[in-house]
Length: 336
Image (cartoon, rainbow, N blue to C red; front, side, top):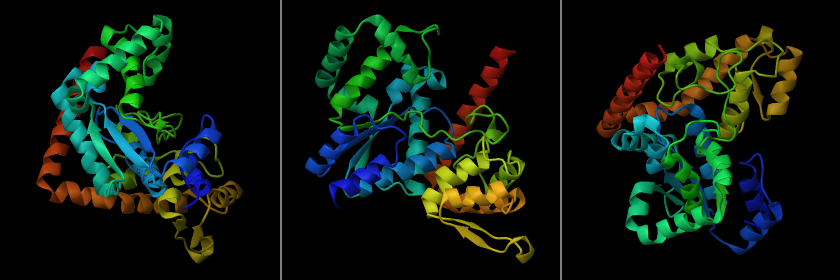
């Protein structure tokens, strides 16, 4: 594969690329550059993180990159995820790994690996902490405060000292992992909107706003049936976003089954072709939604099978659901 072909694949997974010429040069000189991507384990996994991340990682691997998935358990603790309970955070991390493997993330044969931040930092502490200290020493506090948005916080929030340390550690990670390509996607860039009208992104506190990776077929069908999908409207239509960012990238097409009276069966090879039909009214929500449900369920079925048939995965899912329920109840008590 030529450097240009590799660049096209790597570039396709990001909305923005800083210094494209440097990326081309890197791919022409490095047969297996290290790519770093991290996530904070913090609850059930929705389809944006589960499927979109898998698509991106597999593309990188196909372009000859080695992908290091940084399971940021210590970072989640610093950020007070799951109440700062490291044991619960690590349970969620193991559950997430099970999902990615079940849905088809391919890191075998040296293509990549999962790394726990707590284990890696502890085993190479003499290498890691001097990096953190050097970064902290070289930057003024106001600049560090501006960087807290990387963990979903703002300068106006009441931050702990641990949360101020977080940006220094994340910067150190890039050097620590010897990453040549860094994907800023602890929060996925192309975050899918919620399924209800006006929801800019999926909400973990509102299960009806998102498709979760281990949702049953009936749950997916109901959620898509109730999803906001007005006829002929493209802007703010979550069903179309699902097709654009998940279905077509996964299958390289989107198939709609409908009666002859409604135009007959049609397979869309591009999102632009689908948008044209939807905007004109040739494709109706009543036909689009069942096709979308069918495609999502086909993607998720291996995950369901894994969590039903593998005792370890089944136990992990049960424990994660309990943790999420407990924190949801605590949140309600605090709010009320």
